[in-house]
Length: 408
Image (cartoon, rainbow, N blue to C red; front, side):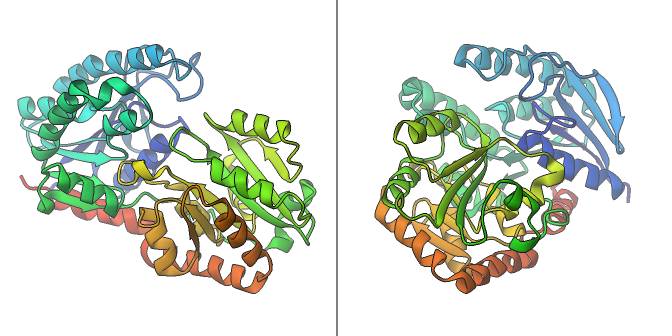
């Protein structure tokens, strides 16, 4: 039987290196290699460089890429970001009307927010089958992050429109069980909700022993140091006060070092506060090349990640899977019943600390620092969990299975 064409919609795609672009590239390239007819409707922009304008049409690894016009104000201001969103909607809609055929499957991601509404309408007009791939839930995320207008009637109205596009879809893919619970609470039929977690490149990111970690030596981190690391984007959804509180409590312990690799909304503020308070137990490094990811993730003895409790079920910190691939334990500063907290406890691959519990986080760090064998065992548990349940091959296989079963 001939497989149908699958068309994905997301504002960023290869060669862009943003998280949503990379995971979409992983999936589409794999599907194309397996014989699917795959297209992507995306913008001509890249995530972090407004000067770049990509080609309108090209084929990469068997994937037909159709890039539409949209403004490129970038991420610095809310007004510019809103214009980037608003200009993408009509361009993507028009491209879908020209691209979709009856029986095609069209998959809407969630950048820009509410793109599922546009995709749903185009699918109905062209007789295509609509699937949503939910990386986050808007407008709830924006409301929780402080956009007050979205806490009232406007937010309620946008949520209602969004929910119509979810309830009318053939399937809704959530990236975590807490998100699936949120969807069910919005009236989305449980039978149409599928949980497929995001993934990391677990074939490239493999455990590296401390002694073989080149970056650790280059960055002057001695063997007797216990390194608590963070890698990636530190954004508005993340909570940093608990980490700072723990760092203050551990300031006098020369064994403990806090390492930050990356950037994001809170990164400059964190560095400024560390300098202002004279916290000399911090080390900051920029994003590392993708080719060095296995090494950079191996530098810490344990990784810290966080999510504000009110955002549970709206966002999942997918960096957890990269940490697990590297064979390192996790300090989950999250809702104790959150997505990552549940996994950490179930697989015994780290510790869970409630946001605001500075002393609890400090205690978890000193406990692991004093028990290196237990720390290594937790890292091994993390890798074993990933291999058993969350490899890239496994998740892409679930996607292939889902697409073959989407009702006609």
